[in-house]
Length: 205
Image (cartoon, rainbow, N blue to C red; front, side, top):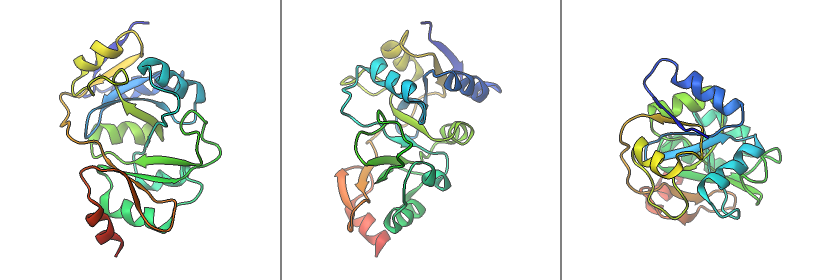
């Protein structure tokens, strides 16, 4: 497979990406942290292809990125009040909410009864996600290697393994998002990140 690189600012970037995604392909694009690689979330075979492209262990769930908080109900079987309040306060931004998943989500996205969901704070990523709908997205690297901050770094790792890279320039990098489990009675931090437990508790107070 030949991996194409396209300027994310070109007029047809989103349309080209949608063509790849709808045909079951994988697209890498910039987010507010690093470059991600993703597929349409309801295309189970395409989600499986993410694991193959990254050499990612199959037991690791893949987060879902949304263009808008209103899309949360598309992937969650229910949206706990806690999750709604945190989404209002911190989205778009570096907070992943773990919520009960819809049974229609393919098992490769998550083999458990929950799914991690986030709205990234990046204008191009949100434009693509609003056009494509929810996507299964994880860092655009070979599993265990450095997460890429440029399109060239994506190409060096995933060249020949994915169909399209959208070059949006260097990303900000930094810490991965805070992951908070909202499926129980109290918020539980599963991964520490830029948003602290104190900030989460303050938003829920």
